[in-house]
Length: 130
Image (cartoon, rainbow, N blue to C red):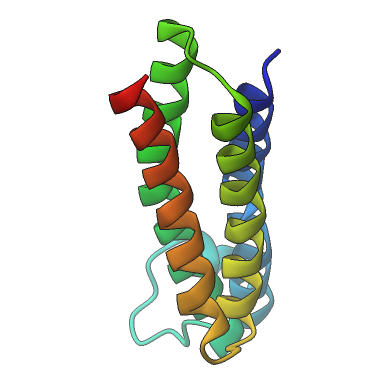
């Protein structure tokens, strides 16, 4: 498996698992039955859990674009050290994004998002010029 697909797999697994902590927080806050339903005026949980949920939504949105780019690289056979490096940078910047968003670290969230954006742009550039 190529490095690009490896980091796509890691990114997909990260995105797949992000919901677990905030759902567990919701269960501990509301109780299992209320968390499974739609209780009115329910406390949405801890601030960190709300931020993690927002980070999860952002991860899903970016996974769509990242996966598309990686699959284009794979299908077209233009994988290179540059696309592999960009894929690695994307994955690690997404980890930093989730952690900095969840724990409200100022500036780091925005910087890590920008790094992941430019990593995707690097892959796109390799596709366009490849």
